[in-house]
Amino acid sequence: MKLKIKIAGPKVHDVGYRVFLLKHAMNTALSGLSTYNWDADGQQEVIALVEGDEARIKAFLKAIEKSKPELAEVSKITSEPFDGEVGRTSEVAMLCSFVQLDKAIPLLLDMRDDLKEMKGDIKEMKGDIKEMKGDIKEMKGDIKEMKGDIKEMKGDIKAVRKTTEATLEETKAIRKTTDTTLEEIKAQREDIQPGYGMSMQQVCVDIRAIKERLGML
Image (cartoon, rainbow, N blue to C red):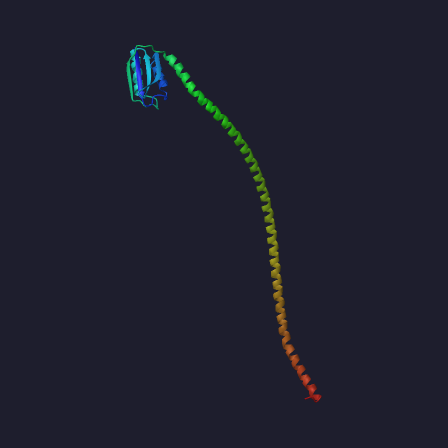
């Protein structure tokens, strides 16, 4: 039995439809299969010519009517008897392999160029990382030096604080001594003032007596 199957729709090309048909032909063990793309009245079509016993062809037709490639958009599937020549399923398998390989080669070449570019980027990144390591090492040295300066400053601050505390103690001692001296001077002044007043009074009395004797009064 031979059959011509036509799959039509807005998107049936470049979605893996021929590989999809080959898979189902091999699953149903069809001996004959030919596939090709076609355009009719501005609509995409995939033509499948199949050959085999009736039961296998019916199973094949039922399978492709129930499912389709994920990205395909199908409007209708029709079939009609066919009396022309049908190629071998194995030949379609080889052709599909070559087609897929032909599609894969540009992608592989692009991937090779991308890998080459990535290697350059990785090399540049390694240089940046090496430079960063040098900067980090330098920063560690600066931090170590800063720690030494801080430690030295702490020692200076401690010494200044100690000196300041000693100066304050000396100032307190001088103030205390000054206060004591002032108290002593004040006491002496109080002791001197009464005697000083009495001595001056006696001197005045003596001067008056001398004047009287000399007849000056």
